[in-house]
Image (cartoon, rainbow, N blue to C red; front, side):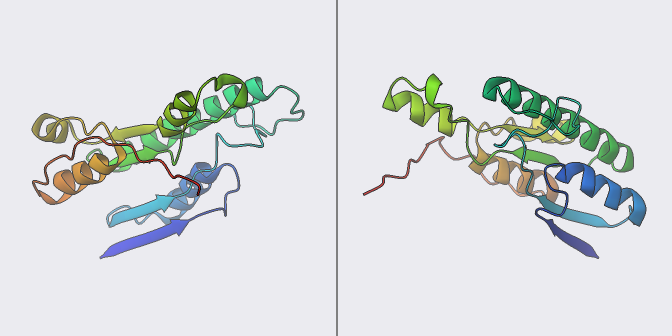
Length: 168
């Protein structure tokens, strides 16, 4: 039996904590699960502290981003630790949809493209999967890595190419 969950914004900015609370209550840890969680942070408005408490003031965008990013890393660590205790062979993927876009850091069009294309991509999987398939190094190859690892496929990795939307 497979359980598919789609949790988008029920948890607000702390979607991973919301899912963990749900998972700990359900106690159905013996079923295979695919869970897609749309994690909001770090994303404007930066309204959490590094400890994931509500941020009371939002004056400095750099500090807000840094603390929101630190909160996201804390959630990822807590989430991964819990799932790993329940299922040590679990495959966990954290992936951003785009990189940051702070106007003051962008000096050229190339900078803008590189900053937006530099997504967060972290994978926790059994060591034997990395040994057999290597590191995927891109979001497209991450999907191939997961399918290879979970189902024993042998999809080759694709060349890493970045695409940019051109507004006409």
